[in-house]
Each structure stands twice: as C-alpha cells, then as structure tokens.
Length: 98
Ligand SMILES: [Zn+2]
Image 1 (cartoon, rainbow, N blue to C red):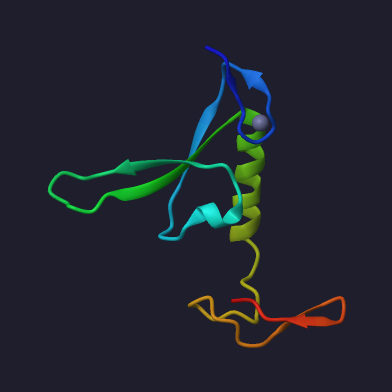
Image 2: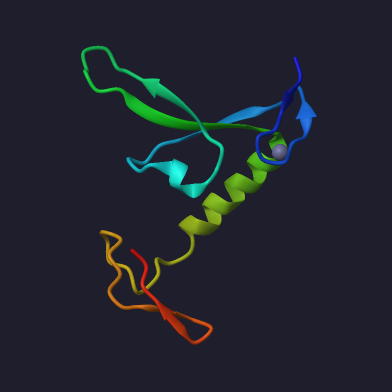
C-alpha cells in the first residue's frame, strides 16, 4: 500500500513513523502531526504521542537535525527552565522569547 510522506509529499511504500512526546503541545509548531494516545496498564492518564509518517529521506534529515540540536550548546540567554534571562537581538532589533 502506497502512502504519502507528510513532510515532502513523496508517495511510496517505504514510510516510517516518527514518534515525539515531551509534555508540550507540539501542535504549536504548525506541523501536521497525528496524535495517538498510549495508556499503560494500571495508569489512569493517557500519554499523548505526536506522530508523522515520513519517507526514509525525511527521516534521515530529522535524525540529522536532532543530532545537530543535541550537539549545539544551549542558547546562553535561556536558563534550564527555558526562561529568557536577557532579550535576543536579531539584526539589531531586540525581541523577548517566552
Ligand atoms: Zn519525505
């Protein structure tokens, strides 16, 4: 059965599913995730998992971006809670990130 990659639109039979979850509403990213819920036996709360069906090329680029993120030092204007400790200046204009 052929499927369409949710990122690049390629149609094929060799798609992969990315699963993402980090206790944050990833729909804010504007990415067309599907959402599935996992529920463990004996636990009342369902766990939301965001998924994307993508081709192997898009999966490879996703893996590369995760690797790049992990190996890049955290911005020096964010503390460990994601709180901005000073404004960001881009092209001479200061902007606050929340
Ligand atoms: Zn793709």
